[in-house]
Image (cartoon, rainbow over all chains, first blue to last red; front, side, top):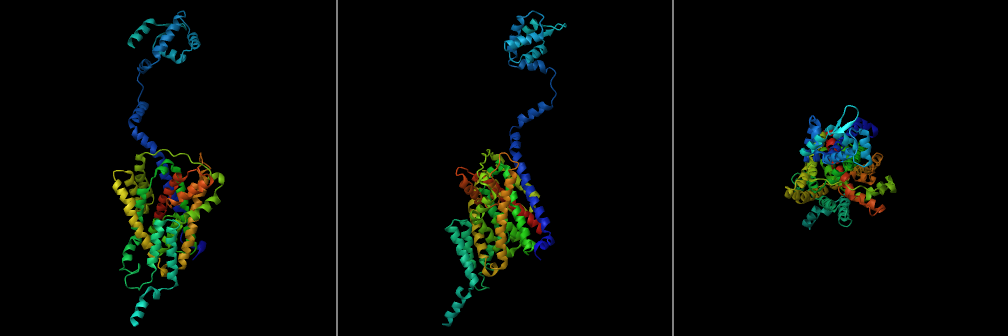
Length: 146
Length: 374
């Protein structure tokens, strides 16, 4: 028996197609695994860092975190001092848009987020009528704590 | 005078026929190609000499021929027929091989897989020419361009064909620098041959140590019949990468592989006795073997071009030719052909990735074919 008849008789087409597929599957899978291997090894080598990251990701934020975080920020003291000087040049109570505009004028970095932090730490306090004033006592206490 | 005539009738001159002289000439050509042309000398010289040993006519029954049960050559040949030598050669290859480039660019592994398509296409061709399925599978594996794998599979499936298949496989492996370049130039444009490859990333020692374990487990779970070859290949590589087993690795890549290569080459050569070797089947095997090799090379090249449709940056499609597992000859050929277009383009290191992948791929293909034929 020869030719296509022999191939069909001995199931040649199926054997060839299945064989090629198996070899491809084996090498493709191996190729995929080794392409990811170095990434897995990096994670294993730095597992402490990744465990910490994962813990932070899934743990609830602490309620007192904001004040704590603000205190931990390196530039906050400096920003508070700059805003204090700026506010001294304004009349109490002052408007926040005007404060931010002045801050931008004198080129203070990140004026919006700093004002937000000052509000959160209650160094800038609302007067209930749409204006704000600087809490000098809180500022002194804040400086002492820091 | 009668004594002298008796003696003469026992000599090779009286016992020889023309086929012996053809085979002796082939043996001499092998030795010439190995020594003078440097075509795979470590294989062609032992095989060539083995052909000389096996084709000196001797009395049958004296226990001299390789096919006689009580001969020394027969015992040495058991390592071939029982499939002992090929896994030991794989042990040595594993202990020599650095998988860094493969680990750095795993996508190149697919080129090694593509080249194995040649095995299965040739399998179909052999069936169509009237070979039995087991013989066809043994002939197809020549396209893997891996002598030990071809011998191993043939020893399991078609012991009678070991001689012609081994000689065909090693001949074509030796002729890689002659067979592959025309196909490579035919299937690629100059622009493609000029493509430069990116520097591969640095691979950590731990990655190299994990790879043989991963490769063994994954490939052998998929094709368990590949265990004898892949198991030894991965074991040899682990010995090399583990550092603490350096002595064993050195033994595997020097003493073990050298001893086995001598025994394998000599006995395979000696198995090509004229009356067994010079048959119409052998001619068919040589024709199909050459076709298998060409198809495997073409499949690798074409698949590299196909990959380039999706890859950025593109890979040099010449690397596809290294997917046949003639290590490291086909990688060297890629380097030579690449440098003919651009002498400053170094492809050897990159070509080693599909080349090594081809070794793994052909071992898996052999395992698959063996399991289908069992």
